[in-house]
Length: 79
Image (cartoon, rainbow, N blue to C red; front, side, top):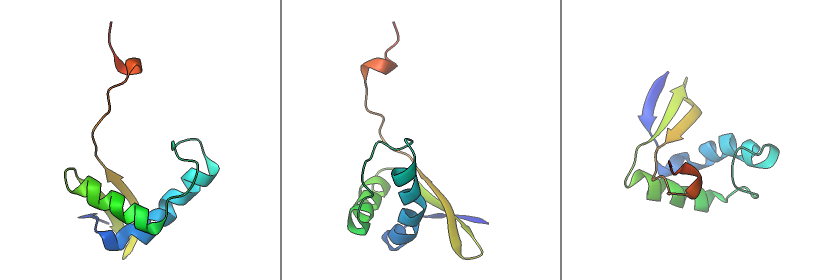
């Protein structure tokens, strides 16, 4: 297994991993699966400033992860 940087060419394969979580779970905050083009744009926006990596096993993407800015919210404030 290798860890590599994600490219926009990976969008379709990453979306295949992500889509079932949107459709079948409450893990994401999305109601609809994004289009491939929208997912490509997310890759561009995120990887411009933060790490966006994929796990590749025998030539197939088997997982991915990325970092991003954490938006402040009242639930995270400490009293």
